[in-house]
Amino acid sequence: MKLKELTETEYLVCSHPCTMASQSPFTYNHQALIWGLLALGAVFTVLRFVVRWKTQRRFYNDDWLALASWVSLLILAALYRASSRSVFFLSNYGKTFYTTGTPPTVSLDRLIHESKVFAIVHLVVMLFFWTTLWAGKFSLLAFYKRLMEGVSGYLRWWWAVVIITILTYLGSSLSDILTCMPLERRWKPDPLTNCSKPDYIGSIIISVKFGAGVDIATDLLSE
Image (cartoon, rainbow, N blue to C red; front, side, top):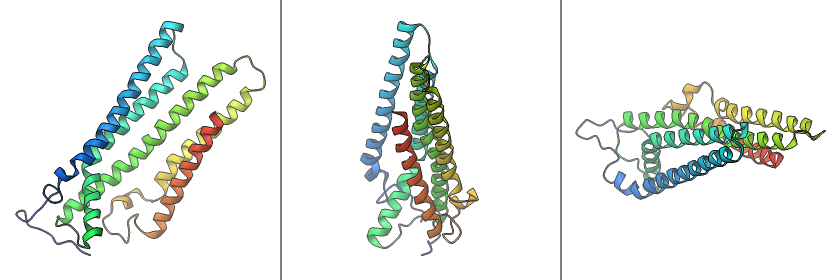
């Protein structure tokens, strides 16, 4: 179904029935949860460094990797905040379309712009999502290495887990990028040439399952 191009006086943005006001509780609740948990993570990270310094007067690789995980989470939260307008605009657009059978009255340019912003930011968000998770795994592995120093026979297994963890991080990150190539397809408006084609949807589902599977597997290996 084609959208009607509107004049400037007809141009309706998501601010009345398709409204930011009606989205506000949902938006604010999510933002409060994200930044609240981020602040909680910051408290524990600071406490970790304070305790480490007071007890050992030095920091270790696992401390820096834990900090890297929190910084990656901070970037992830900032990107989510930056793209939240597009996320809720598209969410409201889709909800209205599927409940009424009629697309909301918005300009085609606005719809294309918000879709492009979402597609670009979502790709970067997923890269930082995997980085946040895997930095935490590497922090645990660095801590275990310190515990294993001087214990014969265990370090070779540790190195095996490290290699597997590195490969799964690269695999999870690359699978998000390679599911739809070239990258420009992600933000093309034409459904016949963008990533909404059934074969691309199947690839995306496989990518998500792969990422979730190796995330759980490496968690078990790191325990």
